Image: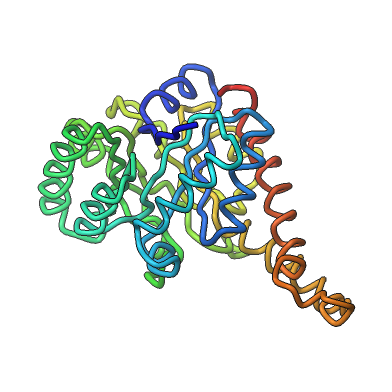
Length: 289
């Protein structure tokens, strides 16, 4: 079977119209890739398989990530639609990802002056159109830490969201108090008034970053208000580490050939499979492929 990655447009529009969201699941290596593909296929859920620039570098490069995911899709006989997406990409990284076969990129220009963010985003709109790929942009930096870059959560300006949406992007990540990583105990929650204000002026597919750790009722409310893509990464890291720690602390790695990486990493792999199933159930995307 020949695989082909698809842009996000069709699956996200279907999600918006259907009142559910598509999971954007970050992968970091072979085990994560297999777990995410396997669970999504079992649930017949469309999938946005995401790779950050840091993860791509760790895996060997964008072309390695593309080749790994595409080959695994063939071997596992994956039939669900899969978008291969660059998460929080730089301008240069976005171009490299497209050249490597990614079907979707996110350009994160939220740290730039708004005029520069607009200029760079407009250039990438033209490039992704030529490539038949989708483009996500960001306004209002998402808080927390992403590939070593830390920031406090921001509330995006509705007017800036309106302007950048008008460039012809596919989807918009707008800060509404969400953060990357572990949410602190004093986190104030999502700002739904800000989300409503953005939605009122920007007719665009909306993305919720920092989906790990947001209370389920808030995630569901965000989806009901039009969010059609939810990003998850940290929760996979946490369950993978917890399962691996449990295996080692139980001394399993010292029993027979328990040190074999195929055995050592299996509990973490299985933990991610279960977490993907849980997120798909929460987002409502099962049987939507």
